[in-house]
Image: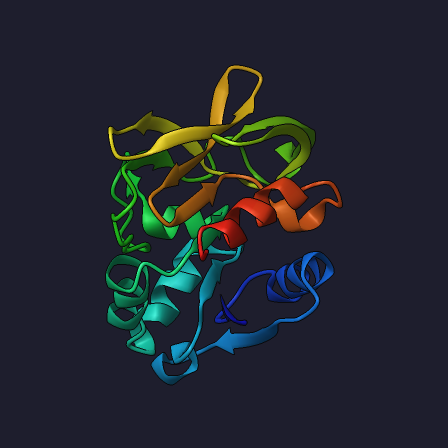
Length: 194
């Protein structure tokens, strides 16, 4: 299976290691232009700097190709931290970020605070068929303010929603690639391709 990681900026290496730890028989492609998306059966938007990612997606004319892959081809997609920022709506417009606005979620960039407020905590993950507790690593994480009808909450920090699923997209405000106990998330992601 060919998996694409949007590799313009962010923690690409850690996502590649995490996905290869979970599933051995895969080919990981670092997506830097539209041709890199050819044949990909799964897509990952890593955490990082959403303004930088947004700028580079625009510079390399990747937006339309990524949108086609997600919305038309329905490729299973994992978006974490900055990735969820790129797919959602922002509560306050930010000229540095041009979100795709395909995820029925409204959020606030850096809603959990700046770098010094980074933290780890237990996250309850509840998919239709499974549930479990994973470690959530929050680094300048966005905060979900509103979840629309098309998205379903699936990850919770106490009573707060920190992750959703919408059709073929799993979107999280935290970094699952930084913990060793997040297989339930990757398992669900791969099941979306069945």
